[in-house]
Image 1 (cartoon, rainbow over the protein chains, first blue to last red):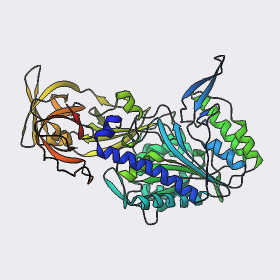
Image 2 (image 1 turned 135 degrees about the vertical axis):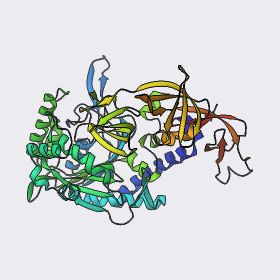
Image 3 (image 1 turned 90 degrees about the vertical axis):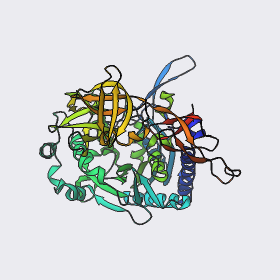
Image 4 (image 1 turned 180 degrees about the vertical axis):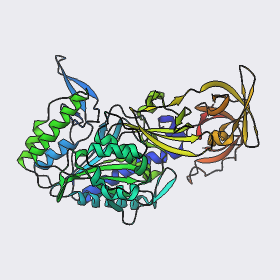
Length: 344
Length: 186
């Protein structure tokens, strides 16, 4: 909802936009002050990630003889940043545009959006939780924002944040032990017993989200932000398994006011295990009739060369701006969102 | 049964034998899972609002609603009265179902009313509505210097909105009904 005339005529939208630019500046300040290096990696990739549920947009890159090469706009800078870690950069971040096709125009998505990713090697996903908390507090104190706002709710964020494992979360909201529902057959029975539809083709993730999105997510992070961590291992292909319980994987998400802000991993740095996961993802895409391409061997070579234990995260800047400005949705914080351009 | 791609504001869904009208919906892509659509729906009998999130490939039981062009006439206690412009019949709608859209209504405004079993269940407003400004405090010298770039004005249906300080009484302006904000001079 901001084209030229909206920004010109509507002081509220203008203020949101100015604040967005400040948030970008402060975010960079924060990471530079923590001795992270700011990286710049390609947006157009020949071999993007093949996460099962992401749809990269394709572009033709032509040489001077009009010979086309099929490239894709990145859905995330993850592989490139991990390659940089493997060159020996210990702390790296990048702020930039990412693209995902077949997602909604507005609400909590825009097909073109701004993401920050940062990685630490050596580092763990717990360090990344600390960074995230510190980043929000740094930005908020500089902007003098006392509470985050979303959907008419105010969320206290300047004190300590909640941290809860996914297993504890299921215990808390559903009174069930997630250990008993780590295979698809049991989970199907649970979903159906709780009154949700089960379809034959539902994957484990689909069943998980049918319960999670209906019975858990709307209540997460209402009073203060919450990290939920250690997901069932089958839901994670780029993270390492939990030490001591390999049924779960080192992954966390951040929720504030019911809104998902970030997804993070204790990074999988074992190139053999990574190769197996990437091949599995590619085969699943094939099965679903989705486009596939070769696995990025340069990425596997980087992992093979050795990365110390690493933690990393992808955080949506647009959603962060929504929380700091009290904007109604993501369209209000994006200058010329896809729907703004289509409607005008 | 219908596909979730047909779910939008104003459609009526049968869920566990009750009828609900969708008041809000949003697509969600968890990234690590298939796409979902989250709906907020109001029970047509009890008025209770619930939230249900469907996987986009799921089928939903959408019952057919007839959309008709009507004109808003007036408010009678807690009920809004509209006239069907083809039959000149009047229908009354619960204030509860009209919700916050009620504040944008003004006499003679054309809206689309969704009818289910001869009862109105929802309205769709134009994206922008034109109003006459009936009260606008004069701009004071120094306003913009002190950061006061807007002022509250009153429109011909009683609606209050913030508008730029140059707007004067008697002018025609457009209000965006999605944001509820001043949009432009008409």
